Image (cartoon, rainbow, N blue to C red; front, side, top):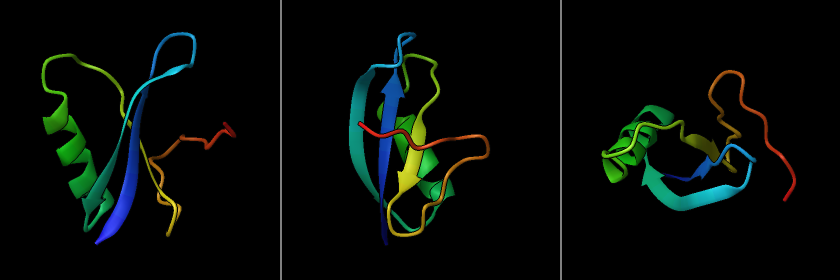
Length: 63
């Protein structure tokens, strides 16, 4: 299992929701994040500190 960080940013770039997700792969973490927030369509950013798995085009920003 890997620990992924899921987050959602508003139009200003502020993180408005975040959660730690335990999953075996990035694909599984994506599905788990989608099930956590089924009511509102949005883009969920996921990253894994251990392997630095990021969806294509994603960038980690310092906070």
